[in-house]
Length: 200
Ligand SMILES: Cc1cc2nc3c(=O)[nH]c(=O)nc-3n(C[C@H](O)[C@H](O)[C@H](O)COP(=O)(O)O)c2cc1C
Image (cartoon, rainbow, N blue to C red):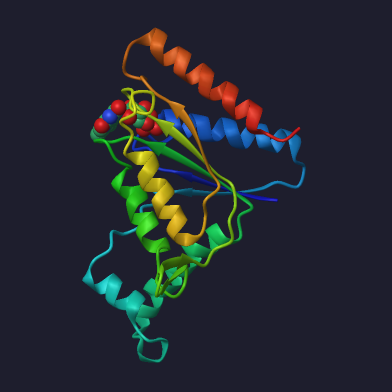
């Protein structure tokens, strides 16, 4: 049983999404003796943003790659392997300026690879990855999901859907910057939902 935990808060261990992800992993460890937890923190260990050189490397034919291009492909392959070999994925997702952290976007950008993680067909793109549970721990200062104004969740659903992963579950901690009472209530509710998700 392998759990991939992806963290992306700029506040590192002080991030609310980080704390929820830790809580999730801890709770799962308690019920699963053989749990292997793989952690990918895209803020403390950033994935480079895509640029022309990296795209060129990822699009290059294997037999024509320079050693530098091969290193880029190997790096992207390693990120993808963490995803493909995980049984369950937990994404700690803060909301920054209405979207996902750019560090997390850079990680996602390395996963979406035509011919590797999805393919184009006459009827549109088709995902090539096995479906698996992805739990999204979404921390926000304000309230979006509850107000029907959430752009993060549709983006993440569409993105993982491209790869063939549709089993997404969102746990929201909203209103974290709206006073102590709202914050405590939101974190308690998210913790309760996490506890409910862990298999007995
Ligand atoms: C740079 C920055 C941008 C933010 N933008 C938003 C935003 O657009 N909407 C919102 O509700 N909260 C926003 N917040 C508040 C965060 O969502 C909140 O602090 C949340 O706890 C972030 O998750 P984290 O603690 O895991 O980093 C922002 C915070 C920072 C630091």
